[in-house]
Amino acid sequence: MSQPDSAVADAQAGGGAPESLAALAKRHGLRRAIARPTLPAYLRQLWTRRHFILTYATSRNVSKYSESALGQLWQVLTPLLNAAVYWLMFGVILGQSKHIENYPAFLITGVMVFTFTQRTVTGGAKSISSNLSLIRALHFPRASLPLAYAVQELQQLAWSMGVLFLLILLMGMPITWLWLLIPVTLALQLVFNMGVSLLMARVGAFVRDMNQLLPFITRTWLYASGVFYSITERTANLPQVLRWALEFNPAAGYIEFMRDLLIYQRFPERWAWITCVFWAVFALIVGFWYFWRAEERYGRG
Amino acid sequence: MAELTKESSHVAQEESPAPKPSKKPAPKPSEPPAPKPAQELGTPTVIVDNLHIVYKVYGAASDSQKGNAANALMRIVRRQGRPQMKEVHAVKGVSFVARHGEAIGIVGRNGSGKSTLLRAIAGLLPPHKGAVYTDGQPSLLGVNAALMKELTGERNIVLGCYAMGMSPDELREKYDEIVDFSGIGEFVQFPMSTYSSGMGARLRFAISSAKTHDVLLIDEALATGDREFKKRSQKRIKQMRESAGTVFLVAHNLDVIEDTCSRVIWLHKGKIKMDGDPTEVLAAYNKA
Image (tube, rainbow over all chains, first blue to last red; front, side):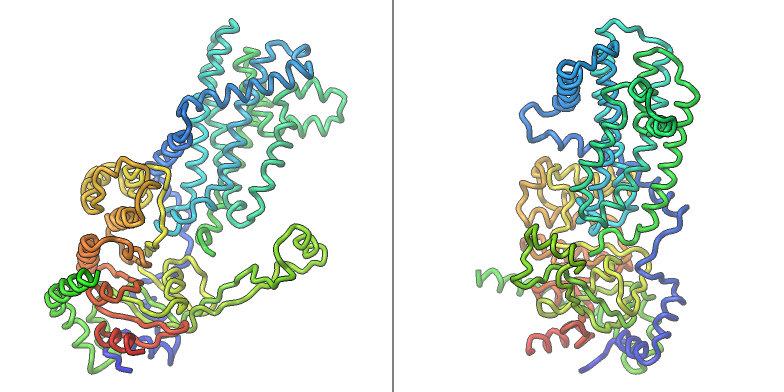
C-alpha cells in the first residue's frame, strides 16, 4: 500500500495519538460538523432567508391548485364551501342560528379565523418531514420552513377575508374605524401561528405518528373554540374555572377579537387583548426556542 | 454505444494532461518527510478523526412479525418496543484530512459506506465514535436531492438561490448563468416533475454550484447527465477547486473520478483500504 499523500500520514499519526487530529482541527479553527449555531447567529441567518420564506410560501400557494381545472379560484371557493357546510349543519339543521343574530357572519368569522391556525398547525407539523430532500441538499436555517408554512396560510387567509368582508357589506353592516384593528389581530394571530408551527415542526419531525393524530386534536380544538356557538352563552352554567379555561383558549381569543371588530362593532375588552397578546408572545418564544434546540438534528436518519 | 464510450474516454485522456502538471506538484513536495509539510498544501477544510457510524435499522422483522395492526398492538401490549432493531456498523474508524483545493474521489463497492461517510461529513448522521471537523457548512448534493417537483424550473432556481442565502440582486446576477449551465433551455418554464432524470440532475447541480461552497459533497449526482454535461460539470468542479473549495465525489463511473479528482479514497467494508494518487488507487481498485 503506497501512501504518497501527506494527509494519510496525518491520519496515521492521528491513529497513533488521537488528540493530534483534534488539535489540528482546533489550530485551523474547524468546528464539529454537528454543531448548532448560537441563537443570535441563528436569528441573523434566518433574517437573510426572508426572501426564501416569502417565495416558498407563494410558490406553494400557486402550485397547490395548479392541477385542478378551476385553478386559483379554489383559493376563494374553499373557504366559501367550508362556511356553507357548517352553516347547513349548525345553522339550519341544528338550529343554532335562532339564538345568535347574524349567524352566517358569526359562523364564517369563526371558521376562517380558526382555519388559519388549524392549517398552519397541520402544515407546520409536516414542514420538516415532507421537505427532507431540500433539507439534506441545501444548508439553510430549518426554521425557514415552518415559518414559510405560516406565511403561506396568511396569504390564503387574505382571500377568505375578502369573501368575509363582501358578505358583511352585503348584509348591510357598517364599516367602522374598528376595522383598522383587523391587521393588529391578524398580526398577533400570525405570530401565534408561527410559534405553534415551529413547535409542531419539531414534534412532527421526530414523532412520526403525529400526522395521523393531528386531525383528531385539531377537531377537538375546533369544537372547544366556540366557532359554532357562543362560549359565554353556552357555558353560563359551567364552573368558573372551566369557563375561564375555555375563554383563555388562544383560538377562542382570536375568534372573539375578530367578531368584536366585525360583527358586534365594539372595542375588544382588556381580557381579549391580554389573551391575544399573551399567546402570541408565549407561543413564539417557546416554539422558536424549542425548534432551535434540535436544529442540527433535522434531516438525519 | 461502444464507440461513444471510447470517444468519451479519449476526450478524457486528451483533457487529463493539462490539469495533471498543476495537481502533481501539490502532493509531491510532501512525499519524503510525511507529517511536517502538510501545511504547504492549503489549510484543512475537513478533518475526519477515527469516525465510526452505527446505523439503527428498524423493521428487520421475521415472518411471524409481519406488519399488521394486530401484531403491532400485541407488541405494544407486551411492551416489546420496536420490532427487531438491528445495528449496522457502516463506517469503522475512518481518518483523513482534506484540504483547500482538493477534489477527493471516493470509490468502493455498493454498501462500503461511501454515502454514509458523505452524510456524516454533511452533519446529517451523528458519529457513534470519533468526530468530523469542518470549515463552514458542507453541502450534500445527492441523486434525489429534489427541490420542489411540482414547481417550474424557474421557481426552483429562485428558491434554491434564496435558500442558500443569496439576495435578490445576487439572484438576478446568477439566474441566466444557472439556466445556461444547466442547458435545459425552454424547459425552465415547465414543472420539474416533467423533467427527465438527467435534466433534473443538471438543474440541481447548476443551482447548488452557483454559490461557492467551501465543501461540496456530490453523491452520484452527476451520473445521469449526458456527456456534454459531464464535461461541463467537471470544469465547474475544477473551478471550485481553484477557488480553494474542497469537493468530494462519489461515483461508480471511474472515468469521472480519474478526470476530476486529485486524490482518491478507496473504502472497503467501512474502512479506508487505500488513499492517495488517483491513478495508483484506481489501478489497485480495478485489480481487486
